[in-house]
Image (cartoon, rainbow, N blue to C red; front, top):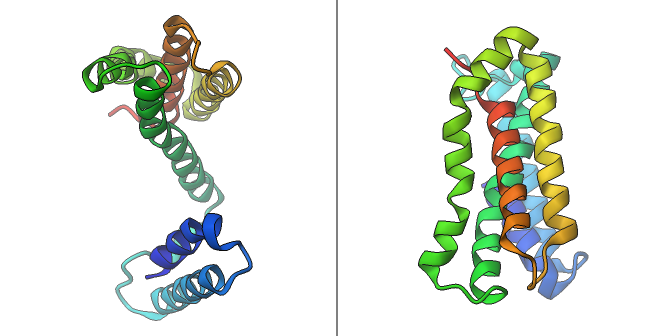
Length: 172
């Protein structure tokens, strides 16, 4: 209920305005629901989500990193798919084929991530992954327009996939 209220309110903001009742009411109810959920979870004997985990700085940062990188990578699928069809005038199959490097890059990097994590440590591997994913996002943000050549898009997709995989994959 909490997340639904937040998402519904934010989705309505573009048409109704951020300070409108149609936005503030669901967002307020969402926030109140999340507060009630965390209050309940701290007091029950068998919590669904142990809120005390968030007191551990390492776990808290790991959760934030996974959420941020997952939203940036998975959140780019639909807009890129739409861009390839409308901006670059590709059919749906052609658009999907051009997005395959996201998956193929991650699959190709599986052995490398394990070696990197063992050699340099998990934290350094995660930070490197975040920096690589940020570079891929920057390329997309700066260079993407209807006349962008596919090799530029390919480089950004590969950087995004590599960064994502290095940031979230834990071998073993």
